[in-house]
Amino acid sequence: MNSSRPYLVRALYEWIVDNDCTPHMLVNSEYPSVQVPQGFASDGQIVLNVSPAAVRHLHMDNEAVSFEGRFGGVPHTLYVPIASILGIYARENGQGMVFDMESPLEDEDEIEPDDDVPPPDSEPPRPSGRPSLKVVK
Image (cartoon, rainbow, N blue to C red):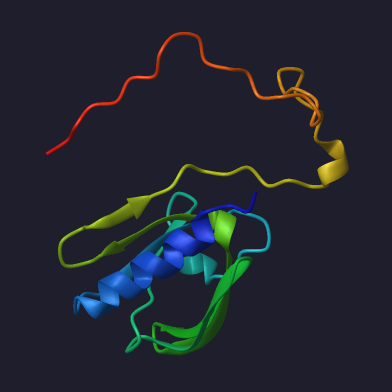
């Protein structure tokens, strides 16, 4: 199953902009393939203003966020892999979402199978006991 992070980042970005707030992204600047001006990073992180007024050529897909921005008046092209995004929030009120830090995967062949995962042909385990539901008002 695909990661939900790129979908959440795009949805929160749109929600923040629709509410006339300024979207900021917290990025792990030491993550592989991240291209941000290192002189502006602090403790391995950088906060990026990604509002429509602050960036040009913003592109968000399932792999990365890329755009052109200015730092100290100097234009830079930024490339931020989705897994390096630690959070997206509105500057004005802090509303948004923080994500867990992901470790970069070098090669999918290096991933060892999990012994707890049943074979694909087997049926999922049935819960013991009766399911419980409650009404939420």
